[in-house]
Image 1 (cartoon, one colour):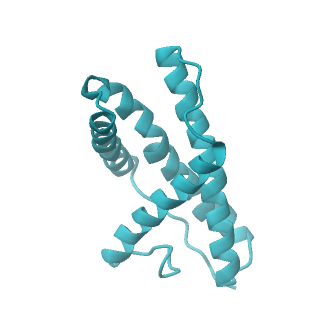
Image 2 (tube, one colour):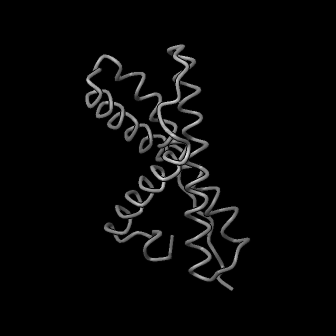
Amino acid sequence: MTDWQPYREPLRATFTRTIGIAIVAGAATSVAFGRPARWPMMTLLMLWPSFGGHWVEIWFLNWLRPRISTTRGVQIAVRIAVWFVGGIGLAFGVWLTAFALTGLWRVPLAWWVAGFAFIGIELVAQLVLQMRGRPSFYNGRG
């Protein structure tokens, strides 16, 4: 049985990284949609996948992972499933926040697209960790 070490990081480091990601993603998204004036709102919305996504991953690493099989295939399948469901939940948070800020009642994409998009976001984030020699999804240490 693998003795998983809980993931720990100072909250200040979490805030700095996730807010920085939200600022850059908010700017990129607002420019891509031709609405640079909406950058502050897009930054707020991007906190859902950046800051919220961090907590989805922490929940998997510190609570769920120690409770499931240590078999690599099971770990991969469950982690991807958590990302998929977490992405759907985070997208719902984005949608509710956007509705509260704008009053527009429209769903911009199918629920399953949000799940797959979050998987993609997490795979890229994990690739950055892998490239830096840190524990990641790819090397099975993170």
